[in-house]
Amino acid sequence: HKSKLHSLYQSMLRNMMGHHNRDDDRYEENLKQFPKLLFAILLRYDALEGAGLQSAIPSTVFRYLHERFGCELECFASPFNCWLEKSANDGGRSGGRVLGGNYGSAFGDTDALFGSFGSFFGMDFLKIAEQSGGSCFQANPPFASEFIERMCHRMHQLLDVSNRYGEDGGNSDGKKKVLPLMFVIFVPAWSESNGWKTLSSSPHLKKHVLLSQKDDVHYYAEGTQYRRAMDGKGNHRVASF
Image 1 (cartoon, rainbow, N blue to C red):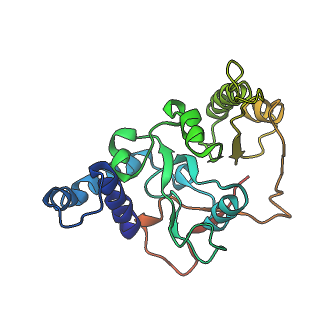
Image 2: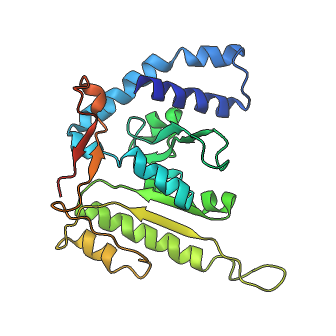
Image 3: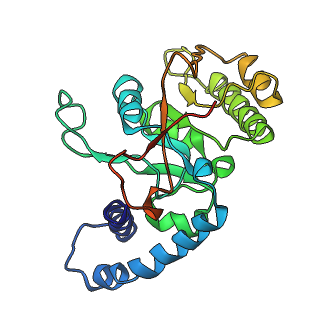
């Protein structure tokens, strides 16, 4: 975790300073603040308690979403559990660059220096999509029905706007300009909850996959694995739903 967090912090510093000169005095001075900033986010996330509240989907799933849909941004994550890895040989798509490290999180004030875009409910998804001509976002929200319902309503608003994007203008050839948006969502199968019902009845729903706890073994990566020494069992737990 420390190595990943240090990489996130270094990348954010270079982006903020507008260059990659490691010899710059300002860069080195800011880099010395890393231990203090790390301590701040540790306190914040330890205060949440509950390893399950900070779990993430495994890196293999992130990798698939990136390769299949170009997904690189997580709507709900933290500096500790966000996806970050060096790309392998993927047919030249990534060119060996670092993948991930783009995410929304609960504590934008302290997490911003580690790459966070801030709260999901304040992120400008349309602007992000405009920069790339369309985007896919991954959402693994806190498992609370009211929160999931609120998330779904915001996604509906964004998708409605993207479907009407360019209606007033359009391209010079008269064709309607579109802004593709896609959300891949991971939630527990609480079929009686309002959150589940809102998602499953969404007019924007294109694909729904239900994994059985009994027949389809699936896992989550603990976001609080930094608290304990590894015991040889890895950092995953069986999904409890």
